[in-house]
Image (cartoon, rainbow, N blue to C red; front, side):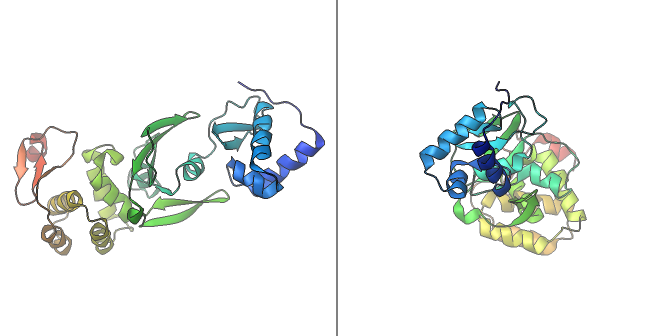
Amino acid sequence: METMSGLGKKDRERLSAIFRETKGTIAVDDVVGILKINPTDAAKMLSRWAKKGWISRVRRGLYVRVPLESRTTDVSLEDPWIVAARLFAPCYIGGWTAAGYWDLTEQIFRTVVVLTTQRPRKRNLSIKGTSFMLCTISDKALFGTKQIWRGQAKISISDPSRTILDLLANPKLGGGIRPTVDMLINYLKSESKDVDQLTEYAKRLSNGAVFKRLGLLLERYSPDQKAAISVCAARLTKGTVKLDPVLKTSKLITRWRIWVPDSWMKEA
C-alpha cells in the first residue's frame, strides 16, 4: 500500500499536463504523446509517480489518477467502464450492464459485462475491487452499439436491441434465462422497442440459437409479433439447443428445436 509523497516542480508540471490531457486512464503511449519523450522514460516516470502515490497502477502500462483526498493508492476504480474500454478494446459494454443502463432491468449487477474481440485467458477477473465478465466476439459482430459520454471519455455500449440479442445468444450475460426473459419483456414494453431492428441484427449475427430462443419467446410472450416470429421460423438451423445451456432440460419443443426445463413447461 503506497502513500502519497511530494513531487518536484518539474514532475508537478508534467503530471498536471498528463491529467489535463487524459480521460480517466493514463497509459505509456499517452505520456509519450503528451510529453514528447520515449516509451522507456515514460514507463519509468509513471512507475515513479505510482510509487509516490499520485497515480495507481491498474495493469502493466495502465494507471488511474489518485484523488487528492486519498491517503493511499489503494483506491477503487472511479469509473470501471472507462478502464474496461481501454483495457479490452475493441469492445463494448453489454449484457446485464447495458440492460441496466437502458432501464431493461431493476436488478443490480455488480459485475461489469464487456464484449471484446480480444481472447483473454481469464474470462472473470477483478481489478481494484471491480469484477469484470469478458465475452469474446468476432470483429464482424462489432455492431449495434451507441457512443455515450462517461466524464470526458466516450464509451461504446450495446444499444437496447443488440443488448437483447447478446442475452439470447448467451443467457449467462443476463444472469440466466429467467432474468433474460424479464429483460426481453421489458424491452417489448419500452420506448426502445424496435422489433424490425431486432430481427435485422439477428440476421447479421447469424446465430441459430438466437433465432430459436427469440422465436420461442416471442411466440410465448408477444404472439402478436407474427412477422418477427415468421422470420425466426424461416431461419431455423439444424440441430437443437437448450433454452439455457446451464439448466437441466427434459422437453423438446420440436417446432423450435429447443430443449426446455420441465418447470418452464408447467408455467406455460
